[in-house]
Image (tube, rainbow over all chains, first blue to last red; front, side, top):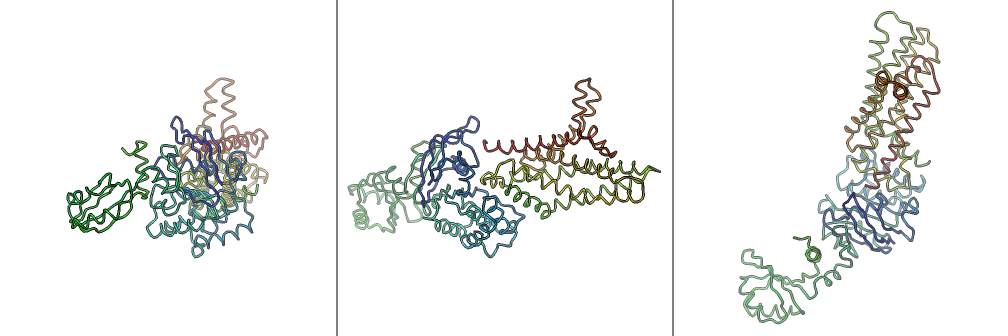
Length: 312
Length: 241
């Protein structure tokens, strides 16, 4: 369990974190979502003990990180955005070095090495020089070094940055495999990544936590009502005429014409999706697709930015 | 202490895993060999003690230059590659990291220095020098080497780029070398202060002649400790930035 209270960090006169407080429970995977420069990396580096805060407290498993740093650093694993790898070492010798550095005995380190190699699927490259590995494998070694001492808290800074689509899926599965056994806090500015991996989201902007909760809850808080996206065959004006008679539609926006197809985003005060479909069919308009759009994280995120004035 | 040895072994191994270690070693041996033939053995008839003194004189130069090359990567490369975060995230003090890295560089420098021993041995076999003179000269080289390595370590702690680290360290070393010139043109007590602080002239010349003064040993140990302490403080201070 990680508890952060009133964490503030100044770089000179610039405030990078402003009284940040939150809690992550054991076994949770929490996403830290924010634009570049919003304070995600600073926050993670402070939690990992790499950086000292200007004020505030970090408690890990009930112990203050700054009162008992040596003991707590053993229970925290950190993958920075650039994995801290010694390119001249083999995968196995590097991981053994990190394990020993973190305080494991030689025997414990060898046992953990086998476990982590299996967990992160590195066994077949254990004798390879790190510099000769592909980017994806280097990222895996980065995760492995964060896991090698069997930490209870895992901090991952942009773990999927720079990976190709296949590697992103593998990384996602790897992190999801940690659910329940470890407390994971990961940062990203890639919305789809956060959505698919995390139980809960912390939205950070300009050094402050501006929203917190599961994706659906954030969406509901931000935009009450329902939002529906429809894709139709036909012109925009006819669609508006057909839907004008349907009670419960507050707004029809975002017409995007592609050939003979158009996409609209409807804001509804109540669930009238069946009536929308009937109205369109009666009006002779081909309804190609209808889907809920209010739960999309992109909307939540953009909404928050609009609310706090950063989008413009 | 356990982590000190873990870091020391990794760092020492890094010299053997990279080309840098071998290149520095080969360059020192080549230059020392050339200078030994040209300056120490050449130039007419000399006493063997003078030949040995000349050997230690130019070896001190190659030792200082080698120290810069051996240390420039130690902290600057770690910062650039982001590997310094491994130590920040581990239960280990910054001073331990700096000390372990320094010792690895020192042991590697000792190895390079040891490989030059065939030259004094040639003088020992064919001339009339004592083993004590050779031992004193090597002690001086290692003392000067330790001090230079610590200055190099400090330069490396300040910079992110290895080249900048080497430039900063070289500038510091040259400044400390030139203190004896300042001593010549200033009045007491400043001349005494600059004279005492001079890295080479005041403190290394006795070793070259086979004389070991406690004051010289204390000087080199103090310089080494001072710059290692500064390096550790710089690494520590980065946790605030």
